[in-house]
Image (tube, rainbow, N blue to C red; front, side):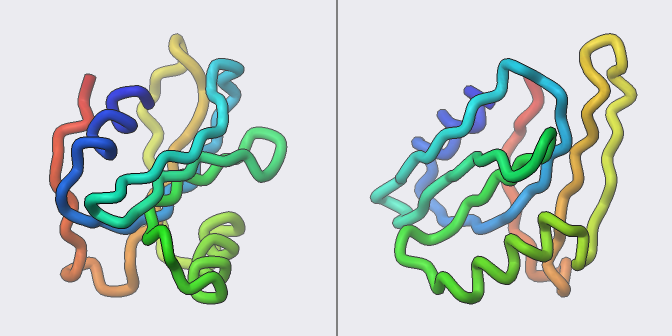
Length: 114
């Protein structure tokens, strides 16, 4: 997560997303960062027992629209991909990534591997 924070802080191009995490890790803590260059914020917050959302969105966002999208991400109401890294020796969490209705409009760049 630390590398993702650094990449966000150094970003010069805005990229919006909502990622749902299901994890048991006690090492994960909520945070909120702002990038004034891209006019975005990156928020990682807990919403139920072992469920988290990582949201990258405009600082001045349409609250109604983003609240709806976050609710869809929380309760799997949209398109999703379930990724299980089969890392049971590290932890048994899963990551679900929610894609836009039109995947052709996605523009994701970067190498987030350790």
